[in-house]
Image 1 (cartoon, rainbow, N blue to C red):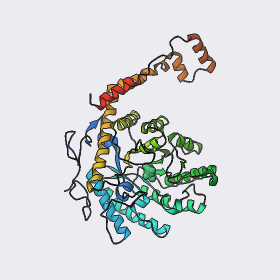
Image 2: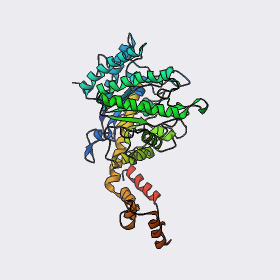
Image 3: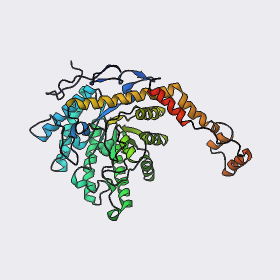
Image 4: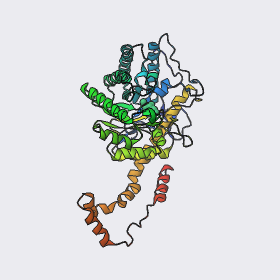
Length: 447
Ligand code: XUL
Ligand code: CO
């Protein structure tokens, strides 16, 4: 029996299941570092990393950009849009099983075409959901999260939940309700809200307060509906500061946490952090992860990277071991993923047109996180970096410092402690950043 799924036709012929061959391998279609069953820190790599494939980039995006049409030719040829969607789904599950990813993620419109009425759109969606359910059972691949595309169709050009026209908000609801139903039907572990066009281009035509109130009301309704239908998973908000609007309401993790708390949504929603979005907000990827983790809002990751030299969402595949190590260190420190995972919200370049390129790109991304995981575990096991950080804050562990931490001091008492101690050498302690960077570089070089 083949160790991968194929439908009636094999869509990636000549490519077998991708295997781990080790760092010395020169085979572009083999993992060099991702060894799914290898145990790191008591857990298999595959269970740490929980890789997911993004349906939209891998099977829908055709390489088109504002300057020219698509360059990626998909072989899903069919007599009608439903048949094409079914073929595409066969191709998608063939890819998931050949690359060895345990999860996938989709928007409603990625898997099924829009119909001419909301009812027909929903019927189309559920035709494909039935097929996905069957293929999930056959292959063991699971749904990390589902979502609704309420930003591509021109009717959403002024936003979905934040649209100034109530009628559009109601049409967005038809999609979100159906996408929640689809996610529940497929056992999805999460449901994501990326705020597509929820933001503004100009305050001259925008009632910002009303739009944010409406967004919160919409999210509350979606949460209540999903819970009523028995959804036990996590709701994610995916922060992004700009693009497509000039100012997205879900700007970054801190902004979203404030929003969730303001509107009483903080119990059900967590963060889906995308590396490239973090960069657009002027943050490192790891800053966003650490910020979410510190506030108890860490959920899932959209794995990709931007380009330092330009300011838009390039959605390139992750390849920096430094970034993946820092990311995995934060994730390991809080005990790893629970419902979330590493979803490759990444796309191959417009000029990467060989069928193998989609595999090569994912292999590189999976290897990069496998390296990052091992470096992160090394940081923890070696203890030098965490030990340094622990010692740096040791003065809060005993005496007056401990009293301060427990909230047992007033400002007057705190000031008296300072005054009694005097200036002396207090505060003149090295932060040793360069030393710690050298230690990390040593790990990255395998020293
Ligand atoms: C857009 C983006 C989306 C979300 C899902 O920048 O990241 O693909 O991940 O809607
Ligand atoms: Co994303």
